[in-house]
Image 1 (cartoon, rainbow, N blue to C red):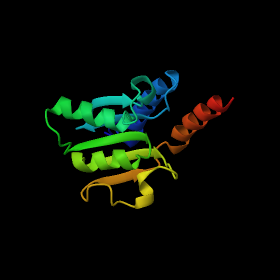
Image 2: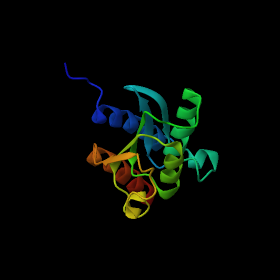
Image 3: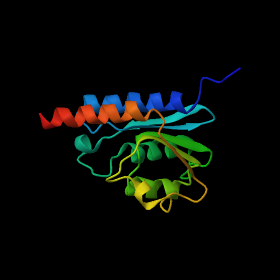
Image 4: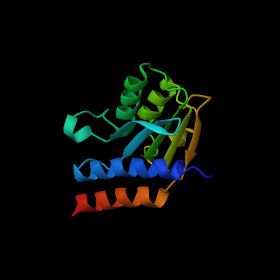
Amino acid sequence: MISPFNDEYFMRQALMEAQKAFEKDEVPVGAVVVVNNQIIARSHNFTEHLHDVTAHAEMQAITAAAENIGGKYLSGCTLYVTLEPCVMCAGALYWSQIDKVVFGARDPNRGAGRYQSELYHPKTLVTNGILEAECSALLVEFFQKKRK
């Protein structure tokens, strides 16, 4: 039997978080942290509401996941995030020693990918392009709405 829990399933969960951010007039980025096919943390961007430039979806997810498991290292965990992590978030993911990062849309201007994998922990697997069109479309819609 094929498990319904795969990268696409969990990215859809992250997209639901991104939609929450969109509805709160936050940049629509969402994230979930998964261990053993179970979501242990959900988050979305909260920078405007908290007046905190560090309140990215990934940072919120890292904190919530660490609290959930009772430790600062996210070994055995996967982060699903709708937009490629920035340098700050990639650095935090490095220190968390997370096993895997899966992102939807690339961020050619601010994404950590422009530095190759130097910012991620050497043992962290990074995958991209999961539901990329859907992740990108939400961001495009948000910024088009802002420009009107």
